[in-house]
Length: 323
Image (cartoon, rainbow, N blue to C red; front, side, top):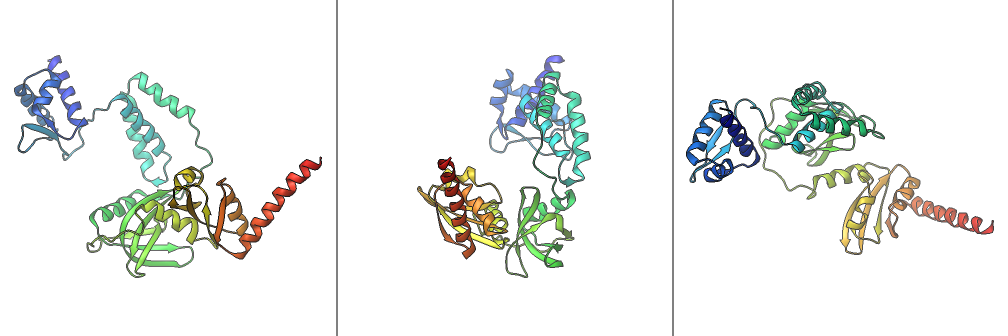
């Protein structure tokens, strides 16, 4: 009996690691015959696991059922899930904290002591600093938007813009993006006939969803790059573009999210599009990349601010040599 139970658990673990399993491979892994594998599969089905037979070749696939069956996780997977759940308890998504805590409690009750120590060590050694909590976002709203994105259905929602006030929008939703401390929706606004980004904490979805739509060509290959461009340049009063005398790959780690958008030119140069509140802010953002650059466009005050910064640096060196 113990041997059979242990074999069932091993079979279930194998089925959870790969999508399709030939019956002969399962029999070899378990050290039994294919007939025994068939009997064990029937036992798993009786326990509620939806194990489907493959078409065209003798084999099996673990499918999705009506209810969530028990999952088998290896050590690294269990630790990753536990750490993720602990992080979710401090999430900006409303309604998910309590659910994550319940799931974490269930998981920690069955974790072996060695894994519980690893999770606790990770938690106690990690400090979340320098990041203020973002606006709270409804989990139901996120799920509604995500479903509309998946099904390519128009999304109707009420939106509260800090500049434009309240409005009702009709858009084709494409992607949800978690950027910095906020959730954003990238969508094609039907009324404005253009791509737009919307803060999820400022929108309230209306039901039912609108008609289905044929997906359009996105404005960028990478939706995160498009969002970064929208947030870092177009929304600021002072905007500029500089040519950096290094490749895009070389400077990628020196341009933080929200600062600007890097556009590759060749292996020796790239463009940096950025925006800020004042020309002085642009100066320190550009110089923080720590590479040679050429100013291509920007407000006249930016060139003045760059010269003043250069003069201050030169004056500091001359003062040091005179001492």
